[in-house]
Figure 1 (cartoon, protein in one colour):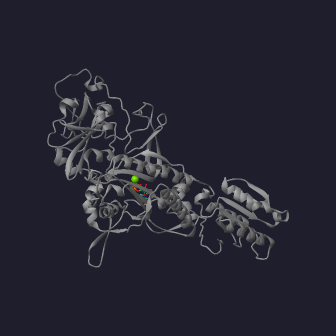
Figure 2: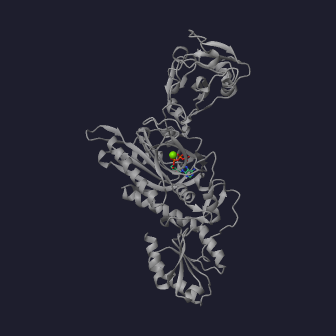
Figure 3: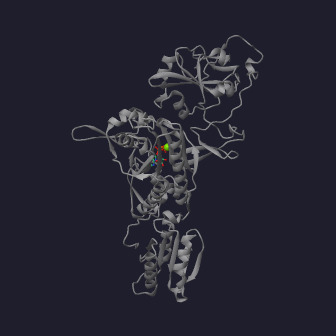
Length: 577
Ligand code: ATP
Ligand code: MG
C-alpha cells in the first residue's frame, strides 16, 4: 500500500465531537468519519483493522466448531411478538415499512431469527449440538449513542447461538465459547477479563461479560482481589452488617420498647440527610427509604435502608420484568396520599412491597408516615410492615465485605466487549425449536447466545493502547504492520530505490506494509506514522544509507540502526516477537 494512493486524512487538531482518547484517535488517525450521530464510515485503514479483528473472531469461532451463516438484518415483527420482545425490547427496536405499509424490524440481535430457522430444521436429538454464528450488522435505537464506535445505532456484531439437547451439552457449548473469547481478546492484544453478569430482559440463568478495564468504560465492575472474582455491579452482591437492634437513635433513645410505631412531626424534612441532621439525628442506616415504582402499570413500594441505593437491574429480577419506572409525583400521591419525603410502608396493604434483604429483622427504624410533615419511629419491620417480598435490591459500594471471604470489594470502570448468555428454553419454547429426544419425547432445544462487538473491541484496543503521540497497535490488528518511510521520494534516488526493494521483499513475505511515498518533511511523516500507530517503522535517509544503514523503530520504543541487508530479517524477527 502506498500512502499517496490510499486515503488517510489525518488531523492535527482534536475534533470537538470526541470526548475520549480512543474516539479522538480514530478520527485524528483518519480511520473513521461520522455520517450522523452514532453512525460512522470506516475509511481504508480503519476498515483494515476492523477486518483483522473480524478475522481473528472468525478463526476462533471456526476453531470452536461454530458454523458461519448470515441472517438478514430485516426481520418480521411477528417473531418478535412471539418471543414477547416486541414489547420488552421496543425501546431499542428500529422499525421500517414497506410499500404495502407492512412493518418490519431491523434486528438489534438475532435470537428470534435463528430460533425460527431451527424450528424449521430441527427434528431429532441426532442433529444436536449445533452452534451457528454470523458477523453482521445490528441496529439499536440507543438512548445515547456516544464515544465513537463504542455505542452506535448501527454496529457489527459477531453473534453465535448454540442449540443443545441437554443442560450438560449447553454448559459445554458455553465453556467452548468462553475459551474462544479468551483467545480472541488475547490475540487482539486486549487485556480483557470475564465477570459475572446480569441477564436483563434476555432471560436465562448463566451469563458472563468480557470487560476491558478503562476509566471511560460505561460499566462498573465489583471485584474481590482475594477470591479473584468479579461481577458487573448490576449483579454484584456484598455482605452488609445488620444494624444492631439496640442502637436506637438519639432522640428516641431509651424512649420505648413500644408495641407500635410512634408518629412525630418533621415539618419540611423530606430527605434522608435532613432527618439525619439535628434536631432529629436519625442516622441514615436507621431510616427506611421508600421508593414508589410503576411496574407494568401498577404502583409498588421498594424499601431500602436510608444509606443504600436501588440497583434497577436487580429489581428486574425481583419483579420479573424490565418494564418499570419511578412513579411521577401525582402517581405517588394517588398511591399513598403523601408526597416524596414522607412516604412509608407501615400499614400499607393495598400495594406490593419489595424490601431489600439488608432490612430483614431491622427494628428501631424511622420512616415516612404517609402524611406530609410526619415520620414514624420505633418501626419494627417484621411487626409493622406487611408481606414484604424480600430480595437483594441494593447497589454494592466499594469497601463493603465480599460475600465469600469478607475482604473489602473494589470497584473499577470497564468497557463491555463481549457477552455470553445461557438462554435455556425461553426462545425455543416460544418459537418452537423442538426435537425428539432418545426416548421419542418432544423437547425444546436448550440455547445459548454469545455476542462480541467487533468495532467496540477495535476501539477498546485503542483506548487501552495509546500514548500522547497516537495509537500503539498490537501487530495482529494493526492496519499495516510496517511503515516504510523513505526520506527522499524522487523515484531515481538511491533512497527510494532501496525503499521499493524492501517494500517488494516484505510484501512478498506476506507482510502488510505501507510505503510513505509522500513528498513531505521527515518530521511530518514521522508524526503521522506515530499517530496512526504502525507497530514498526523503517526509515531510509541519505545520511544513514551512505553508511550502509537504515533506521528501525518499534512504535513507542527506541530507534536503532541496522545494516541494509539485515533490515528485512530484523523486521520479520520483530513481527514474530
Ligand atoms: P451495552 O450494555 O453496552 O448496551 P448490551 O449488553 O446491550 O451492551 P449485547 O446485547 O450483549 O450488548 O451485545 C453484545 C456486544 O455487542 C456487546 O458486548 C458490545 O460489545 C456490542 N454492542 C452492544 N451494543 C452496542 C452498540 N450500541 N454499539 C457498539 N457495540 C455494541
Ligand atoms: Mg451485554
